[in-house]
Image (tube, rainbow over all chains, first blue to last red; front, side):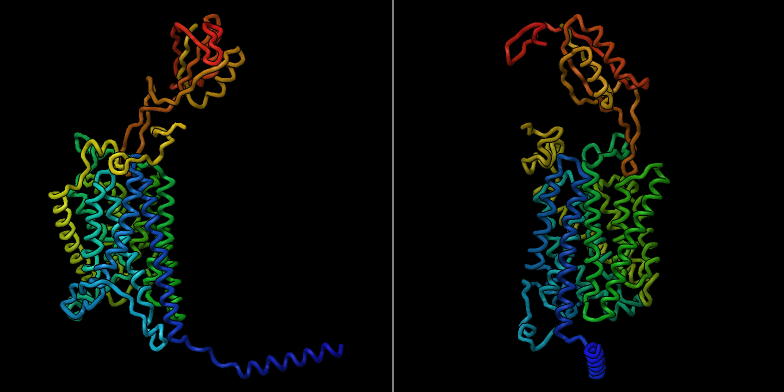
Length: 449
Length: 112
């Protein structure tokens, strides 16, 4: 007993001594901030990379079996092209020296890492330069995959890849430079004219609407699938090959979006930053959830049955809607913003169909239309951003992307042609472009062993 | 020998199979088919566009039976496959000119 109480007494003394000499919480060093910020870009980056798989599965699920392999090639191809073009041209065109000129674009040069000071430990410039390149690269890949879904089942592979080269190397970087590159949408003149900067936190306009405009241009110039419209011009249903695949793709996109919006905070070096990022994650989730519930309810009300593909589109529309401003809303507001996106999409899909624009996966409704809504909704929850600023950004980027994309699509159409022949379209892309079957053992497949 | 072709609802396959084996009809070939008779299809909606689905999945059973067993076989299939709803199916009987068991070379009713 005596030994125990002595030990206890000594212990109490030691703790007391420790508490008296403990310093105040140490500030985060510059090097730590550098590490955390870079980590945010890397984690956010690979989460957004995973969205490429999400788009692939979503598109695969919504096309017919005879085009499934083609969609896979398109998506893995466009992701790869985006990565290379953004290195060769895109990043510098979007970020380097944009505000030196009129704020319309950066410079033409190949990107190279510049972390010598950080490696030497002499100066830490916020984040590893390659981590930012990587994070920005996966965004341009996302914009390109939006185009892939709309044009499915009748576009030729190589002309599509040619368009992706121009989109990821030039069109996307130029409009991106106007906002994220420090270009004219953030200039003093712009603020004087419209009352505030143009505000697009993670890319409702810069990524989603931009991809949507490029897809719209393509769909108009490409034309609808054979059999999509009957002699009376009414849209015919062409059901997709795998609803589970489409659903899995949507869930994967939902997961990746936490990186898409969360890492757009661009910093994780302080408690305030990580608190912001937490709010962004929660708001992103709430918006998707709101989009699903709204789309399901509206679908049930309009059609008496629940269209799963509308529920999936609703989730994505919700995500797109919150992407312009995922930080400032409360979770309730985020859910409502997403819900409006979900409602929009249930009406936009058949509306666009009836305009004779054949959008196989509803990408124009989800990304372009909901992207505009998301961008215009920012002033509702963010002080100091004006509707005029938002509208100006939406219209100017829209006009640029629509016109630039149209020029490229027309150029491709009248040189190498963009559309599969009727015979090829009927046989399917997998036969015509791949020489393979997606499911050789099932139903109409050729494998019987 | 006759070839009995029966179009039945897919959910009735097990019942029909059991009924036939109880009268010693030894085998059958089953194919998955689509079709319609006087049964109208139903309407489905996909992304706002309505469409008629008139081809419904059925099973086609083909079995070669000795002529003496035909009446019993028809009776067995009819009873087992009936649900009293439209779309229950039909039975056809065709003559068979010849039959061969590939493994042993038996011909005629011995091949059945």
